[in-house]
Image (cartoon, rainbow, N blue to C red):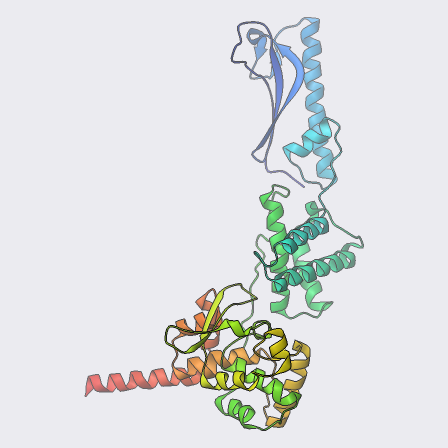
Length: 408
């Protein structure tokens, strides 16, 4: 691994209380703007020192011995520098110094650093991070471990080996071996990039292997139930069994915009009376830890009242008896088939339906929708707005009316 710059200088280090006599000779090593000074354990009188040559002037035997010693030190530095490059290890002033004074350098290993990061994150769950965030980084660590085994046939990798090729091959492996979609691959690479940036900030690697690597996501067509599909699901009688229960919880999220993780842990105490006298959901989203305040529509309130006396809700202080995400999605597939909904229906489709069919399509301002969804950035909400063709048509129709009035 080549360094950008490399300079070596011998000089006399002056003392504040210096009067006369010899001054210590120091060797200053500068590599890529990182500077280290090492004592040579020798000294020289200032009047006999040649600062340009970095040697002592004179022809006497003691002068020759001193200068020969400095020549040897210089040769050793260049030799250490050459060995680091040949072994493809990180070339820094610190690594040169360590080898020069006989200290062995234990390479910093990628998976060890990743594991340490995850252990620290685990202690901050509930404070700075949501449980789901930790799980994503755990999965990302396992993917990184499997990729290293696949590409290098080893159990861990020195961070000095990280380069553009590593990142490009990691993307290739995610898409071909793990069969991940492009956007899922970008999410895992984004998690991995955080570990790389930690190494850069700590000065462990000199250059960013993500430099010149473009991490772009493909735009996704976020489907939602149409008004007629939503009516079809809401109006069908499923009785009091599991299908009816799952349908009700799905509809509740269609009218509130809650994600699975948020409705699963929704407590009765989190439904409060707002300043307008109406019932509101007031929570912090589990995914982003951002606040979300949602006025409850009559359809949502009606569903809540149906489960006031449900044993699971009473015993666990829950608003609704939510099953596991896997079971919910399994029942939803059956529900969509019975209701004649052709598109794939998953639990998260309810959140999309609230954002588009229930709110944006009916003229609710995007700023209000963004607040209710708990989005940190309105750009995230704008992704939903792109598919609301009806609202676009309504907006243009109003514009036509304004233009017609102007010219009449």
